[in-house]
Image (cartoon, rainbow, N blue to C red; front, side, top):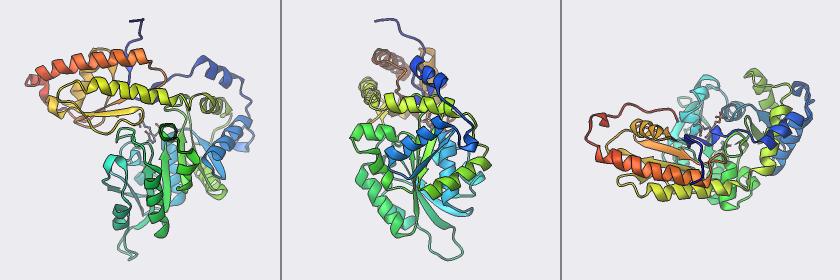
Length: 365
Ligand code: TLP
């Protein structure tokens, strides 16, 4: 095998580093003060994102978390309730900001592979009486991170959006990895986005840019989100430097996501060989979640064991481990990681009644 860099980092597609060509584009980007709306590169990026999503306008923001929260804040009022999947990113990984910054109550619902059933959404809508929080918005995540990068089929998106509209609710799409859904299915980005009032997309995940996300919607919505971005401390000055990384990523790194999906499928073939390991969701894009309960050890123990063998992954819960493929991990590295995981976890299983079998607690994503 040719020389590989260790550790092989499969914790997240956020760990990628900007390529030389991307850095060059960033270094050469024309910039200006974006609070004065004078940064040509930020403008170009915002126009490009609005165009690909089929929305009137877009806004560049520092992170996916800020993007989601600005959308929620802009489309709701404090005290409102937001329906989301029980594994939603906004529920698990945004530091409680829906409550802390938007004053929202989240209403998590179950749904197979991250997908909400329209009937379940309808049943969760609160009556109008003053006892209740006002149900204001339905949030969907495509692809679905904690559900193994699964894709919402377009008809499922449309069915939930239809129900929401009928009941006067807004729809927010957390499309941090909408690019992956688009590449996996061929469904145009704008078709997914059409069902939503607000869309958030990220450049710093599979697309490999170092920083940045964008939200999109009507011009009026984006103007209000811009005001809220200022309040949240997220207005930036010569942000063209980082927007150029995002533009480069959009121009060069979307179609290649198909390779990351192949790498995840390849890794899945290795993981299937480990007795007792279960792949929880169909592997459709670049995320793979395995249940380790039948190995008799905690997810943290698996993560630590693999770290010791040069493979990095993350605990998604007490019993689930997440692997994510991305542009900085080659097919050869994925094969090597697969072999290591099979060997190390088969060894762990043999040890399953050993002293380390106690679950220690859920780790970071
Ligand atoms: N997800 C990160 C962690 O926060 C879990 C990761 O490693 O996958 N929406 C979705 C669906 C996401 O997966 C993420 C990041 C975000 C929003 C937030 O983006 P950032 O990290 O830029 O705030």
